[in-house]
Length: 274
Image 1 (cartoon, one colour):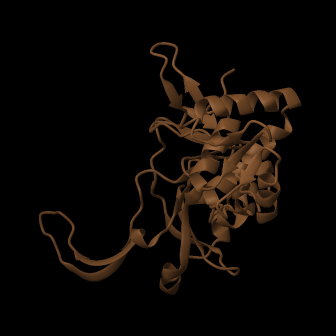
Image 2 (cartoon, helix red, strand yellow):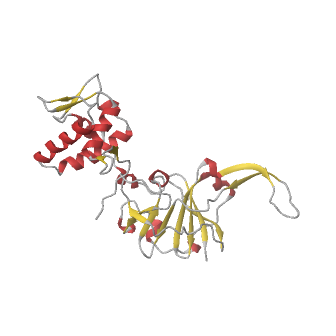
Image 3 (cartoon, one colour):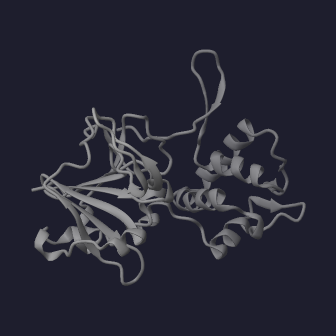
């Protein structure tokens, strides 16, 4: 039997049964078209990110680690509807998740299309999407999703997959010899996206030899000629978020030249092959 449950908000939030013996979400036909989560990769419309051995991750919720027994959950009360954080459907041993936002809860007059329509006045309804925000196949222990931002409120700590440099790490990175800050630009000015790029760049540079670092700086100079480079001091002058972004893209080797046409480009999405 299929079941729809609701998880309420807050430290005392709990799982409640909503509806049983119906199917709520469709299983996407493209679920076999997956790639392991990679911050550098932007999904195509028919692709899903996946996480293998999901039950072993710290951010997997206990609800998924234990067997599903519907009788363990009380029926939701009318008062609890306004406190729902997300919906979770259990269908054919597959778990489907939908984060509930204000757009999913509406209060309107409406009538169902039928031979004898009846106006229903000022009723609150909850919208269920055709396809879920995330799917968990317990038997295969694989978790599927499209947008990390949608599920981070459900799986606390999953944002570690999209690590952001701390203030201390940002200051440490900007203190590198190959960076010279100018025009009063400092770690305090670095926004979220560049902090995420810094976290990646720090990991990348850690694996570079001295020769490889010199090579990558030559590569950056070739593609980012607008960045001021001091040949004597061997550093890039960084005075804005845009200049820092260009430097970080260079460290990740996102710039390339087409074989035909010799056109210089920036890779917006990266997937390692082989």
